[in-house]
Length: 282
Image 1 (tube, helix red, strand yellow):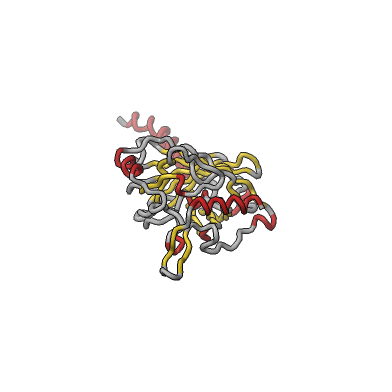
Image 2 (cartoon, rainbow, N blue to C red):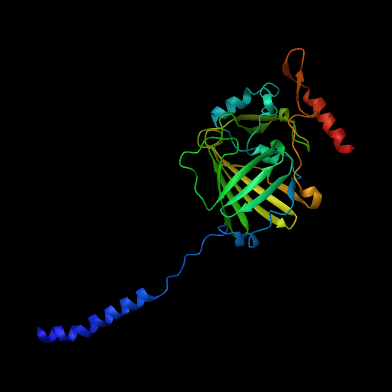
């Protein structure tokens, strides 16, 4: 047994030396995901110069995703004037995704671990947590709780926890279609369920063209994921790239305040649309 012990000593010594050598090697730092430092801003797609102006309709032209029986019953009973989800008392926001698609510019800002999206309409700002996690108990809100990460040169954003009174486009009224200026009476809106989730994919088609592809998941409304029309934005640079001051209410607002009755009254949507078209031609 003594001889055997003597023979194994060199192997034991070699193993110990190898362990010591491995422990002495410098540790390899795990690379942080892009968007974790100020230096990363030079590696990211340039969403940040100027602002982005939508050039597509804010409502979908032909929503065809099948509705659940409950959502279909709601849509069948929808009244376009009484149930209009926009421009309510106190300029209530329509929330995501409509607020980001209304046509007013978007402005992106970066800091490590965060991208902020300023929405000129309503002067609202979304905060996208880069490489982060959803809050354990997020408060429902009009913009949702959003986390984001980069897949190559595409920014992928997942949002959950939305306010109960946000309404989503279910369908369009037969024969109405949509035009460049689309008023809510042309479309049918309804509520969402508790597990609503939205995923956006933001990608530069060229230096001055941004596309945003949106998929909405809600099995209380649709029998399959709802894929929205792709939104296209064009970049404004220079003075045109500075966000403007947004003021609640305008002559194009479907609601007007009537001092005699001391309440807001609905204007004729056709007259509002006519005014918008006339302004566009000036």
